[in-house]
Length: 359
Image 1 (tube, rainbow, N blue to C red):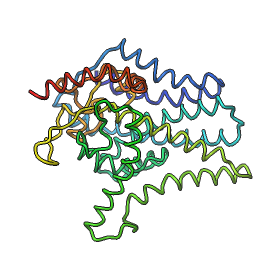
Image 2 (image 1 turned 135 degrees about the horizontal axis):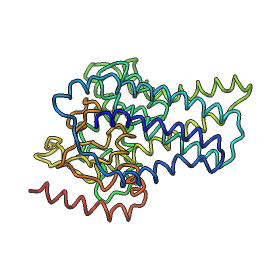
Image 3 (image 1 turned 45 degrees about the vertical axis):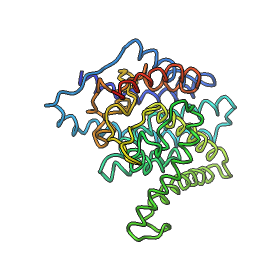
Image 4 (image 1 turned 180 degrees about the horizontal axis):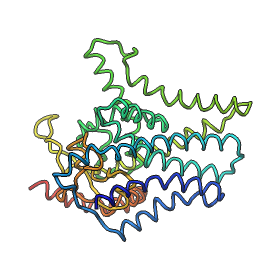
């Protein structure tokens, strides 16, 4: 099983190939990637079923430190960055029709948001300066660098409480959640960083303000891309910033869709005013579908991640007692887009969890 898992994580690298193939095949073939991710993968998830096995304890130390798994994340960072440059080049020199614009924005957004932010999330939790830097690079490519601060120092502290913008409430639609999580998440990240600087006696606008640098990084990246392609083509290329920001919006919307799914309605018990029980395995929705976990580097084993945030993706555990989703994230994202169906399916599951947690 361990060898299958090793090879399985290469699944994510099929998505850039599908985008390139769809682009050169032309027009409707560009939608091959979204169809594969949101329809074929959920179908295969159903056919293959779940994998609830965990790595045997004696093998954990070697599996957790094996460079192979880290190499995959480094390699993904390189592939995504090259692919984004290629897409900007094509936008500059090809006269895209509307179908091509939509297909490329959706396809690139799935790659940078569905997989890229997942990789950035994994790297951003680690202590290595190289891994943290690469996390920021990937987040800059989707204009969502505040996630680096808000997620690590905000979400993981306040998850399952009213203070967390990234915890979706019961009967809250994805669309309402998106607005709150995006804008409050951004302001919350500034608040966290300002409080850190205040404790050190430093002014808000200074070189030590990490949030300021993270906010400017995507703008600088977009400006560099635009300038380079302006120089290559010899005139202004409006296509590059439009494509860069459009795919970014779709990418971080996918992230917010995942945030919505991961903690829907799962609130921690308030033990005293503004004091909550410790995060445990019951406070995240999990999915053990084999294929989608390969694509998402086991992000769907989310309860274990919240208990051990620094634990490497390859050694995250399945927990039987954790609330389980009906299927993997790709299928659940489709469900979340239709609130009446989402509420019908998930409120029933949530009420079952509330009944168990009340005991």
